[in-house]
Image (spheres, rainbow, N blue to C red):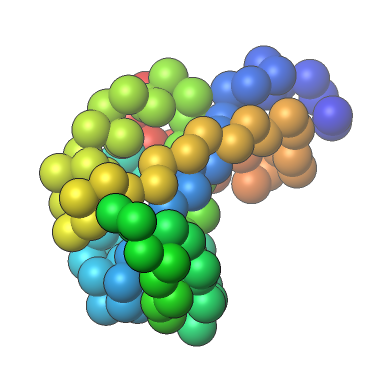
Length: 113
């Protein structure tokens, strides 16, 4: 890692899925506006197969990758849960072990911290 400025584990991805790209975009805008996320990538057109209440379901969804600081995990997850339309949303934390320092510096500036 160039410059060793980033402490390992300083940043994370929060991963979730939404029923539509529009729902995902509303949540993404709120998280960025509230400085709980530096950036949110929305991937529409994902097909999910899962069991829900005893029935195998198939649905079109939009996946989101939310880039934020690890220190904001609980706050960002609580806000995402409040914004989320699902009864039981997937809210998963994925570690970011390192990255290019100029991007990470920008991400620091975009998030409260």
